[in-house]
Image (tube, rainbow, N blue to C red; front, side, top):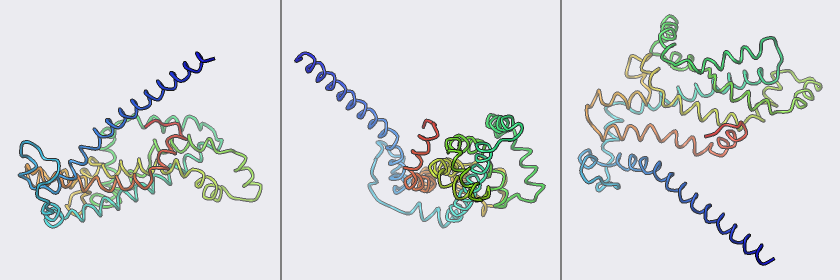
Length: 285
C-alpha cells in the first residue's frame, strides 16, 4: 500500500513539475512576442536620434509627442485613421451578414448540388488574390468606384472562409429548434434573425475579429483603387511614409503604433468570444 502511495505521489510531483516547465516556456514565448510590440510603442515616444543610437534603449530617455503631432498635422493621419475605421467596420459587418446567411443556407437547407456549390466556394480560397485583382479592378473601374468607399468595401464583402466557418458552426445547431419555430409560424428570415444569429454569436465574434484584422491590415487593394491622399487607409498611409519622408524610423514606428492600437483594442474586448468561437468550430489558433 505504501509503495503505491509513494508511486502516486512521485507521479503527481512529476506532473506538476512538467506543468510548471510548460508554463515557463509559454511565458517566455509570450514575452518574445510582446516585447517587440512594447519596444515599438515606447519608441514612438522617442526622438529619431534615440531610436537609431547604439546601444538601443528600451524606455525613452526623453518623452516626446513630436512625431505624433507631425503625422497628424502634415500627413493627415487622422483622415487615414477615419478611412480605415469606415472601411474595416463596413467590410466586417458585410462579411458577417453574407457569411452567416450563406452558412445558414448551406447548413440547414437541402437543395440540388449543394455540396458542389459549397466545394466551389471553398476552392476559391486556393486562388491567389493577385490572380483576380486585374479583372476585379476593371469591374470596379467600369462601375466608377475608383477612389471611393464603395470600391474599397463592396469587392471585399464576401469571404469564403467566413462561409465555411459559419456553416461548420451552424451544423451543430439542432434542427429541432428550427422545426419548432416553423410549427409556430415563423418565417425563414425570423428564424435566421431570432434563432440562428443569437446561437452563432461565438463563431460570429471569431469571424468578426478575423475580418476586421484582415481588412485593417489590407494594403494591396487600397493601393490599387485609391488615387487621392484623402482616400488612403491607415495601412497605406504607413506604407507611404517612406515615399513622403524617406528613411525616417521615428515616423514609420509611430505610424505602425497608431495602426496597431485599434486591432489590439478590438481583440481585447472580444477575446472571450473569439477563443470560444474557435474552440466550438474546431479551428486551431
